[in-house]
Structure formats: structure tokens, C-alpha cells
Amino acid sequence: MEKTEKIIKETTGLSPAFFRPIGGYYNKQIIQASREAGYRVIIWTWNQDSRDWKELRASKIAENILSDTMPGDIILMHDGGGDRSRTVKALEIILPQLKKAGYEMVTVSELLMKTEYDGVPFYQ
Image (cartoon, one colour):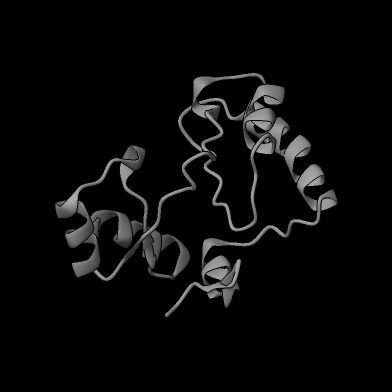
């Protein structure tokens, strides 16, 4: 975590506030270490893994997301680890359809600052 934070800070001038466990695998020790380092642990919405890492067709990646999107979802997509041209093509399908359906794309930080979702406050 420290090495990654250093690289991010040197590159962007900003320190990360969130930690996403690699592969989505976590346990009490990982959560505790993340909190002690000052991070909020963030995971994608359980049904919103695009599976773009499987080298699927763009249309299938889009289908994986669009078939079950709900307000407040955090969608997992990858920008590294090989050829991401299918992911980019899938976004060309996904983003216009979500916008047409009334969705607003925001960062995780912006999402967490929303005051409530279905009447339940994000922060209590």
C-alpha cells in the first residue's frame, strides 16, 4: 500500500483515499491494515463486474453491465493488464445507454457524497 501510495502521489500530486483489494479478495486483516493506513475500502457492486478481463466481445461486456444496472452501482472495468480495446468499445455502448436511461456517471468520491440512496443516508 505504501509503495502504491508513493507512486500515485508522485504521479498525480494527490494521495489516494480509497483502497480496492486486489481481485476483490479481502479479510479482516486486509480491512484493518487499510483502515490503519487511512483508506476507505471500496468494492464494486457485486453484480457489476464487467468481466472485461476475460477478453469478451465488447457487446458481451456491455450486456454484463446493462442487464442489471441500478442507481448507486459501482461498475468494475479494467484499464490495464493487456489489450483493452474491447473495454473501450464496450464503453461506447454502455455510456450512451446509461445516459439515455437517466444515469449520471460520477467518481466513487462523488457517489459517496450523495446524501442518500433510496432514502438511506450514505453517511450516518
